[in-house]
Amino acid sequence: GENVEQHPSTLSVQEGDSAVIKCTYSDSASNYFPWYKQELGKRPQLIIDIRSNVGEKKDQRIAVTLNKTAKHFSLHITETQPEDSAVYFCAANPYGQNFVFGPGTRLSVLP
Amino acid sequence: DAGVIQSPRHEVTEMGQEVTLRCKPISGHNSLFWYRQTMMRGLELLIYFNNNVPIDDSGMPEDRFSAKMPNASFSTLKIQPSEPRDSAVYFCASSPQAGGLETQYFGPGTRLLVL
Image (tube, rainbow over the protein chains, first blue to last red):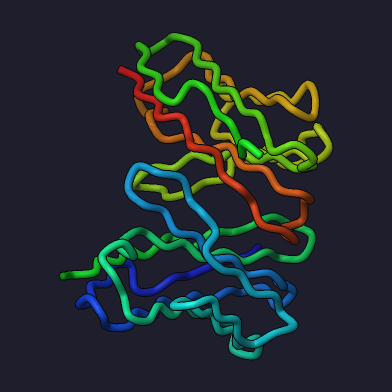
């Protein structure tokens, strides 16, 4: 079955710096990779996603890159702000199955 | 669109009592998912439905848990009898289609505490 690993488990950055979270997956048939942000006490919400036919996608301060050969994808947040503090989950979808979520990364943006 | 709706938002009950969680998916979505989230185990998929039919319930922890989807706009997750270790946040999510091909949209969750 699919296994999704996520690193680091916790990340602290200074406001204005960049943050990078990396996920690896095991099933080469996976073709859709969403990223969710979960603020304390709230629901996970999609912030960006990428499909296997592209290598990079950007939306303002956030971007996701995908390396299919190495089976890893990364979330990049630039110019971090205090409101970026949250738990971030990556996910992958082995073909014909539903999401397998990573264990999450707790990001703290320090003022 | 109101998004995925869950009720109740909070539930406190005593061990041994029956608990019923409710979910209304986004209109037009064909797939519905029930997740459980705890600090120790993270986000766990319990069961999912496609076109109201349960497809995979391998994540349901034991026979005390059951889920139904009688129609396209309503699903329930029942725990009977409840135990303290069932305390968690339970999320319902829906998606336009199954197979992990589209985004899942999460409801606000039900925070369950079993005393």
